[in-house]
Amino acid sequence: MEETLAEIEFLALSPNRVTVLESLAEAPRTRSELGELTGASQATLGRILSDFEERNWVVRTDGSYAATATGRLVAEGFRDLLDVMAVERKLRDVVAYLPTEAMDFDLRHLADATIVMPTETRPNAPLQRLLALMRDAESLTAFSHALNDRSLSVVADRLGDQAFEAVLTRGAVDSLTAADTLRERLRRVVAAPSAGVRVADDDIPVAVTVADDVVNLLVRDDRGVVQAAVDTTDPVVREWAERRYEHYRANSEPLTAETLTG
Image (cartoon, rainbow, N blue to C red; front, side, top):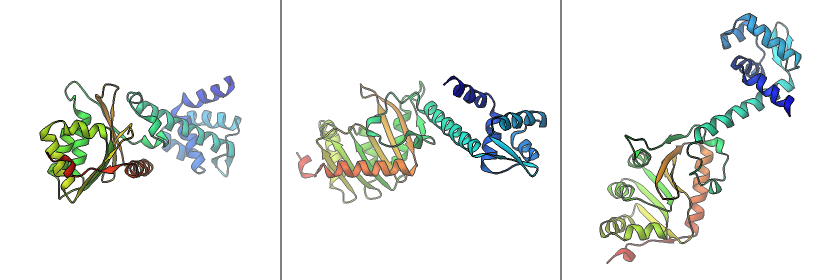
């Protein structure tokens, strides 16, 4: 274990070492080419390449250097580690709120996600992010344990111009229908040909909205306070969202305007 950690440290302490090994894992390079890629001096490159040759990670071939099979293995494994740590750093402040038990995809697919969190000057920044996506979308698909009045207003305002489908928990629907104004707004939505809402008796542990090609997760703490908006266009996450929606849809019943009248 200690020797393995020492080798990881050997690479991690030098960005130039990482760049050189990854570059040689892609294709053979001359020292001049490696110098252009790294900006390192020839003396530094000489030490790096000598260290790599001692480890049998690279070999000299016809005036250039190439990674060996184990060199390529190390480069690939170290890149995976870097990618994992980059995702961990991105999600560090929100992971406590993510319903990871319902997110059955590799979290590395959130590497390029946009994460918006509340600030002192913009406490509603996560919700504003979602509302902006909703306003600009031609198609919305959602499944959630909550639907706030502002999201419902956006949907109601876009009726006829936007396709909208959602599966909500019964608790979310009950919260909306408790107020006469929101009940009427919801009735208008479900009565529209371009919209449809279904009600699930089972719990939906995550609030997801698919706005065109963007998947947005609005994450809350145990008190129901929104802590972040996480959205991505990653196709694997999109596929996950579509599968989850179809699951909830199959285990729900339609909400009709008649049930909301009165």
